[in-house]
Length: 481
Length: 93
Image 1 (cartoon, each protein chain N blue to C red):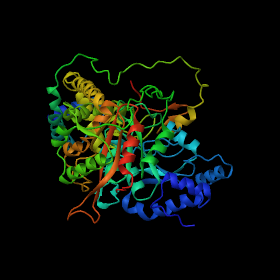
Image 2 (cartoon, helix red, strand yellow):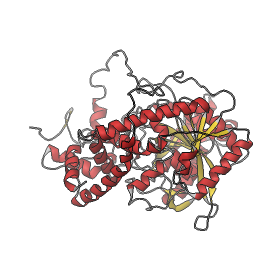
Image 3 (cartoon, each protein chain N blue to C red):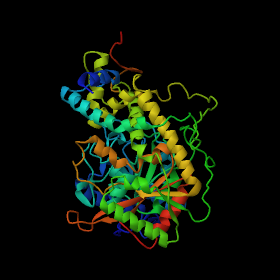
C-alpha cells in the first residue's frame, strides 16, 4: 500500500506496523522513493545504504515473532561521523573519504538491537565544524523550505532529511549547536542531551569536552523515544554518567527564566524577536510563570567557545596523518607525507581551526587564551547554577535569525560563528537543550509560508524529561513548522 | 598576525598551506582573535569555585586483554599502505 509519510511519526508508524497497515519493507521503500525524488536537489544524504530493504525485512520478522520494540522498522538517517560497522563514515571529509568503519558506535549498536532501519549517512560540515554544511566535501545541503538557503549545520543533512520526509528521525552530533541550529532552520525538533548522557564511543571526535550525540525528529515524543534508546552509561566512554549522577530537582510545573539582557544585545532579527514574544505569551497562557533572569557572563560564552573548541579540534584532528587510516598524499619524506596528507585531506575550515587551535595552545598564548576560556567556563557554570536555584528551564530563541542564503556568510568566519550565540553555552556548561519549531518568519523576500523559527529550552544537568514536558505542553494543540 | 606566524603554526600543526591561504588565514585568524579577545575582561576567580559540573577522574580496574592479533586484520585493512602485519611508512631516521 502507499504510505503517507507527511503526518507520520515514530509512534504512529509503530502502531501501523503492529497492526499490519503496512510492513517495514513497505515503509522503507516509501522513504527510498521519497529520497530518490528529493535528494538530488536537497543533498541531505551522502550515501544511501545498499541493504535498506534487507534491514527492513529483518524488522518485519521481529513483528511476526513479537520481539518488535517501538523503534523496530523505523527508518533513520545517520550523521556521517557516527560509525556503523562495514559502512563508510567520512565526517564529510576528503581525509576519510574511503574510510570504512571497523566497529559499531555504541549508539548504532543500541539501535541495531532495537531493529531500526538505517537508510544512509547524512551530510554535514566537515568534522562537524560549521553552521551551514557549506564546509562539506560533498556539497551543501539545501533547506527544504527554500533551496537557495542553507539547512544549517553541522547536522544539516540529518535535519533536512527529516524535514523533507526522507527519514522518520535522525541522529546528529552537537558540539556548539550542531543539532539544534539545523533543526531550527528546518522546522523540526532537536535535542542535545546532558554531557555524558549518551556514549561517544564510535563517534568521530571534534571537541571532546563539548561533543554529544543528539536526536532529531518531527515531534518531541519522537525525539524522546530515540533519546531513550541511545542514552546510558558505557564502559567504552568513561565520560558517560550514571542514571543517578544528577537527581531531578524540578518539582511540579517548571518555572521558566529568560535572560532578557542577553537577548536584547544578541543581534536578534526582528522576526525572531516577535516570534519569541508570542512563544512567551503562549507559555503563560498554558499556565507557566516566566521571570527575567540574570546570566551576567553569558555574552562571553561564544568567545570562550571559539577558544576551547579549536584547541580541542587541533588535538583531536592530530590523529589524521595519512598513516593508520584515511587519505595519504605522498611526498619525498615522512614529514612531507604528514604535511601533504593533512594539507590536501582537510578542508578549509578544518585547516583554519587547526591553525587557530595551535595558536591558542602554543606556550606564549596558552595563559591568555586557553586558561582564560577555561576560567570563563567555570564562571558560567556558577552563573547557571545560581540561575537554576530560582527557575527550572531557561528559554531563548535557538538562532538569532532564520536560515540564511547559501554563500551569505562563507567569506566571514566571525559572522558564521555568531550563528552559535544562543546554543554554545549549553555545551560549555554541559546541560541539556531542546529546540522545537515555534512558527515562521514571513516577508516579501521569503518563500511562501515563510521560514521556520525555533525556540530553545535549556534545563539542569540530567533534566531532559523536564524539557520534553515543557516543550510538549508548548506544542500541544498547536502544530508549528 | 602575519604570514611568518601562520607558517610557524602550520609547521607545528604539520599542515601544508598554499601562499594564498597563508595570507587569507593571517587576516581571518586576526579577526577571530579580535573577537575572542573579550575573554581578557574575565576577572580571575579562584580555581574550582564552580561546583556546577564537578570534574573528576574516572578509573577502572585493568581488564583481561583481548586475544593477541584479534583485530590486526580489521585495523590494517584501513591503513593506506601496509607491509605484512605492519603499517608501512617512510623511514624516520
